[in-house]
Length: 381
Image (cartoon, rainbow, N blue to C red):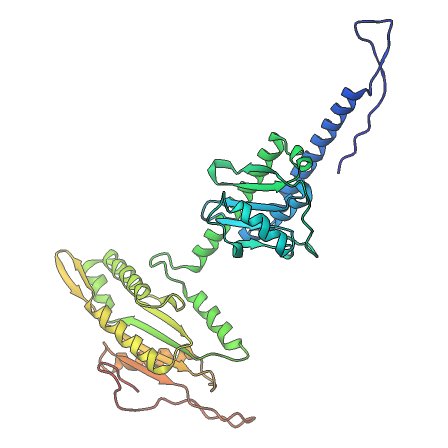
């Protein structure tokens, strides 16, 4: 907060015989305006620094909402931003009754704003809600730069008077810059998690997710599929590496289109792909693997006027969440894939973790179980 001190001095106007003292009503008004402008500049500097300190878009918006409340003491704020910047969100420091009342008024201007989309006092960093007061029937509009959206603040007349054009423009530009930086950071972060050719998650992401699943106190059933394109080298040798890249990209898209959103699809390396199926039993995992094998086998690629179909071999490993194994689920899926390759390719093999007695120093190694085929084209080894 800046403090402005007014000094008195003699001012000689047109009538030199009548001295005038600085400090009349008009001069006090000018002093107040100067003080308000300096306070606004101080707030703007703080606002730009604090919203720019985070690279998380939600944290940026939360910080902005808190700072704007501290300065304007609004009762309701609507952040109407373009997609990628936060969409439509409301903030209110009021208790539930007051918040709902003012939301019902705001929804006339923002029909898509849901009550569930309003962030309350806790998310604004306040210890307790504030009571609604009379006279909060004014509003302030802050436009973000380059048509990225706007913010509407519902506040008192006194608070609205503090909103100079220069201040609101500075707030809009600072918030736009902070959100752009956060979005760019998210984009770069996402690129570091994705395979550049297929757009799928990379191997590092898959391993991190598996580590998180294994560290859970109560692990859920988990299945892993590792898929390898059979004789992929022939594609590169016959039609060139661009053709091989086209195949890998097409397989990645097909896997994404034929798995649930909650499943993790990743490029495991080279012509290998992996699918992580959480809360999925063995029977379902085998059905999914076989369906993917058939789908991929039906996919046609055309190179130099020649139609080409490929096959894949799939290794499946499962952990029911009740048993443990000294060998990782990825290692067991990889061994199952090796068995599928060795058995003639274009098939599904699985490796099931053996139950291990939960007693100190009394464990036995996991084994590969031989059994009859359960599904056509699925070899259970």
